Length: 128
Image 1 (cartoon, rainbow, N blue to C red):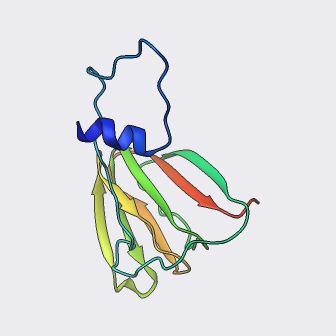
Image 2 (cartoon, helix red, strand yellow; image 1 turned 90 degrees about the horizontal axis):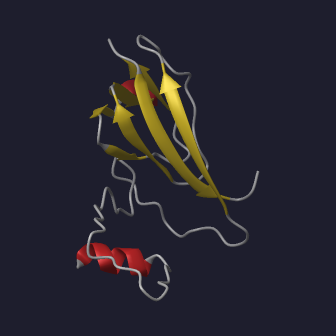
Image 3 (tube, rainbow, N blue to C red; image 1 turned 180 degrees about the vertical axis):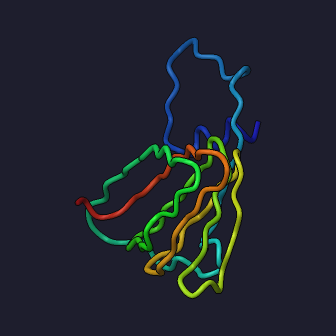
């Protein structure tokens, strides 16, 4: 029942004859703050663009330091990735099946270990 409610809460409409009894919904993350505990605050006014990116990151790769101006989230499909904030104050290890609510306007980077990492990132913000 919860899966059906989430499905419908996302603005989905059903047509006659559709059966959701076999549909399964799993909430992966729902949060108003990033992984280091800072609240996202109010959302932007104006047009919004949604971007979904799939990354394949080789083993033994350190990504460059970077930041994002809007909230986004990453879902790890396979492998393990370490993420750290600038200055090393915050650190986390993510494995396949885990989700990370990203930092906003804070420098961070990721590092893979012995295996490649495949992840999907979801971003929403002003059109680019």
